[in-house]
Image (cartoon, rainbow, N blue to C red):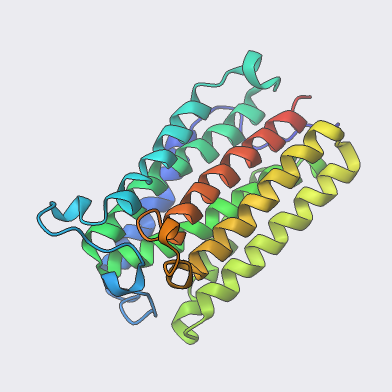
Length: 258
């Protein structure tokens, strides 16, 4: 198996904070204020509980975002002995993915709390480079991608969000492209280097992705059933998203061990 050559040192935190800062600055200019987003509690099946502070008004949809932070910290703590990976490149790829999870949780919580346009935009926007990083990691194992490839894909991923400026469903189109690209990259990696264990991780990640997408879309429809009236479809979609993240880690660290 080829090894990826992305960076000689692990500056993973700064390589996440750099794009995050750039996104915050761009959002702060107001250029994305016209992007179509879903704002207001009516877009969620979970009913706000009167008397709770704003950051817990929908307690289950709020607190579930801690799961991303916990997941990211867990994977940051996994060393070469735990993952089987060797060398700085695999550790760097894993740690960037981990920091993305740590950052993503508070951004989603801010959206639930504030119901503000800036938070909704960041929530949508940050989803894209997370899927892009799975693409990068797969292709780094397959093709020994270097820094130029990584920068190009991340730039493409972040730029693709501006489709939402030209069409109301621009974000959904960009997200669909990212998901399909990540899926095909994972399939190529599985076919070339995979075994029964990696296939199990890939299937679990794929099923979790389906749950993430469909449970969110069916949030209000599922609320007609008692079991989904407090722990709603949106809540379970976030559970699936965290599991998707986790099994992507499992799949990629399992195969990135040379």
